[in-house]
Image 1 (cartoon, rainbow, N blue to C red):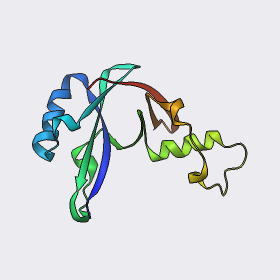
Image 2 (cartoon, one colour):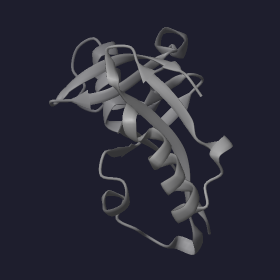
Image 3 (cartoon, one colour):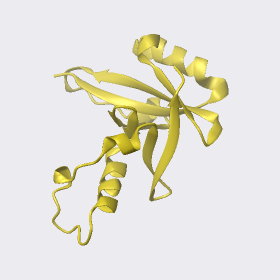
Image 4 (tube, rainbow, N blue to C red):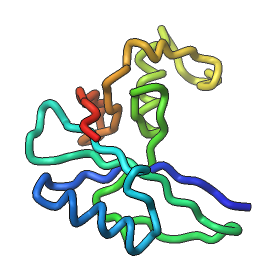
Length: 133
């Protein structure tokens, strides 16, 4: 069974075209399936999102091919990692998180549109982003 993984790569602005060409030639990812987001707080990097399809249960070490990438998920125009989502949920819970079912906590995704939600230096960080292509 094929598995689709959504990745976000942090690419220096001078290397964006080269990176997109790499995705096209090495992984057959169509250029119109690659999206770029500007980090409002950092003019030197673009967050490039794309999907990798692993055929028939094949596994790869993503860091071998994409050194500055993370597996992400998307809700509308909010991008997040699972670890960051878990930390976000912890901020929404009053009191003890001991046996809480994380899936039962509702997140108002409207509040996080235009955000990249990551764990940065071991803490929850929200970055403003704007889609540019």
